[in-house]
Image (tube, rainbow, N blue to C red; front, side, top):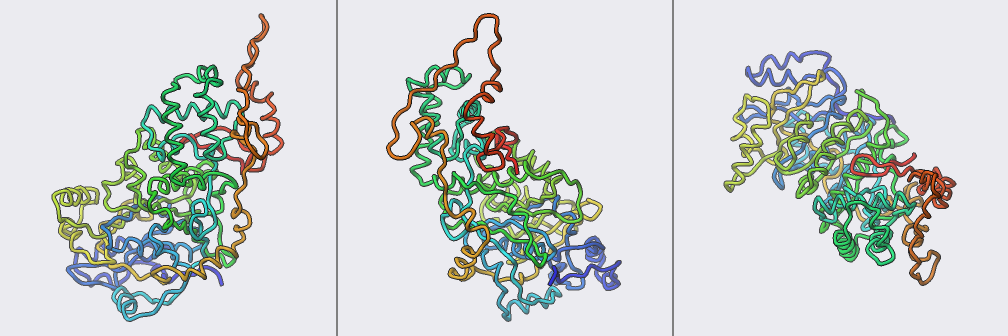
Length: 527
């Protein structure tokens, strides 16, 4: 059976809307789109839910990005589930991060209940249970899911500096270490590779080499080394290595044409929020590098939900924030939509917030002066409204939200207070045994399950081979060229090296990649 969805957009203005109160009728008409849509819920006006006035978002506008915000317990996760399952039904792949462990139910048909039937009747929804085709991942294989790893060289210095907690100067110095490793053909596959290169540069043997890395002091290199050691001791090692995950896997569809919902299970790493938020940004950056330009499309190639977004921006350097803003701005032309999920819009920098055209704002609390300040700031980010938003946002119930989206012309719609539809999939975690079985039966399991430790920088600097590692002498400095001859360029040195020859033989594999860096300093990989 091909993709289905439970909404049939009206061919023109619905006569039923003409009987609504003046402001409500005008708002409802703004959501009567003619093309493919996602149904979010029904309009709320003057305390009543109006099922004849559906609130929708055009499918083609989902790559214009969005924000789902609200206080804890207001229904953000169910909103993600509602949007994700409708995208899947219309053939659009989705990526979701499952921080609390309750999103895995999206793969299972929902459970009928009086509460679900009551909600469906209130919003005019023809509800029936349905699960989505899903793939489950886990960072480094910690938890239930296909292991998701990245090599250190692919991850890049800017993202790694963020997750290590380095300051701006140390971040720049880490970039120089990456540059040195790239230039010398020292593959940074896992953390021990980066630690080996940094340790070598701070050793007596590497002192001369350190002088060639302009701007990197021995003291700063030592700080980076200590940060790496602590990071490894905290158990971060499994997230870096091979086989590195190909983010193109997220773009797949099921045999019946529905979009695959990729769920990254994060409960096992809840205590490392900086790690998983930065890893999500790497996935997004990797997609940006690998996808071709497509311009405006009738439906997105992927919609990516970035949960706990405030963790990404907290204590971030200026360079990091600029890279996030640039990625979000440009990835739309690759057909990818990004929804940031957080508590208040003020968690998202203005440069990023200004690019989020679709907004679903759940209830906010105003218990403290800071809460009241955040409420006023949130109201200012919405278009002029027929509602008293400051009052409305504190009075919304669970599963209700203030919504504004981009119309088919790209213009923002009026704010619509909305009672949201009930998801058709299970609103809770899937059975653990069924989840484990689904992971092991996945066609990707054999490809990514087993970690591989190939020869890389660590082996090259410590003697290589198996068994006990012996300290190897430092790479001999290049002999000065005879007088009258030009010194070979850095590129010529690398191309003539044995490492480069080895890399060239393995083009097309994870090891055979271009060491060219772009946004975030991530490596561009050949697909």
